[in-house]
Image 1 (tube, rainbow, N blue to C red):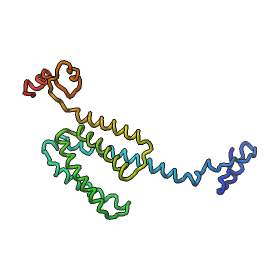
Image 2 (tube, rainbow, N blue to C red):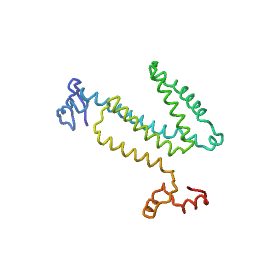
Image 3 (tube, rainbow, N blue to C red):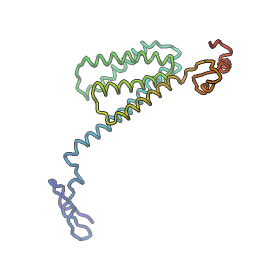
Image 4 (cartoon, helix red, strand yellow):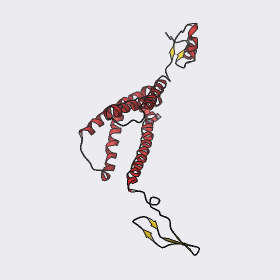
Length: 222
């Protein structure tokens, strides 16, 4: 059996402990059971970082799927104009914003109006892009480009700390290659390459005259 006889709140010392009839003094528990005062701020930062990353995950899921209803058969059958779609989106954002009023302090700022104007403009262009090239290419392209623009704002204007600038720039370089690849994924060019360059036909963007004729039933490809 184990019986706790004493506890010192000052030094976090476990008092005398009895076990099996043998008396022994407990070990000093300072720093083991209670976090030190100078570590409390670090713990809060870790929690805030966790909340931030979970918020990022939620934003990724939301931003990655918000355009899916626009490609449904019902929406495509009525051919809704991008401005009308944006009216629906803006109305939904306005109404749902009232849900957080009990939890935050409301303060007016003209920066909010500027941000809303930029958001409406970007959405209008996004809806137009989706109608022309589809969700996969449009959203992948603007999302990658948005990361680059956001990185430049944070690094050059707001002077946010970057621990490894070389690695960050390398990541941006890879992202640019990925954006280019996604943008060209549905691009096909009918070209008549000389024999010495026929190896370029292995690239999906190039089509030979014979391949083009088989796909277009002889339609003019020049």
